[in-house]
Image (tube, rainbow, N blue to C red):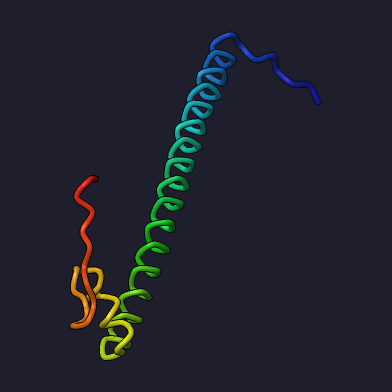
Amino acid sequence: MKFKKTGFLTKLVLLALFIVLAVRLLDVRAKIESGEQEQSQLSHQVAQVKQENSQLSDAIENKDDPAVLESVARDKGYVKADEKLFVDVAG
C-alpha cells in the first residue's frame, strides 16, 4: 500500500489546526483554574457563615441564662449594686 506525500498546504492546515487546539486548551485550563479558585473562596465563606450561625444559635439558646445576661451587661459597662466602677481615663 502506497501513501501519497502530503502537500505543503495540507501540512500548513494541520499546523494551524494544532495551534488553534493548543490555544483553546490553554484557555479552558485557565477557566478551570479560575473556577477552582472561586470554589475555594466560596467554600471558605460558607465555613465562616456556618460558624457564625452556630454562634448565633448558641446565643439564642442561652438568652435566658443568668451568666450570659451578666456577661452582656458587663460588656456594656453595667455593674452590680454593691460594686464600684473604675474608669481608666489615661488611655
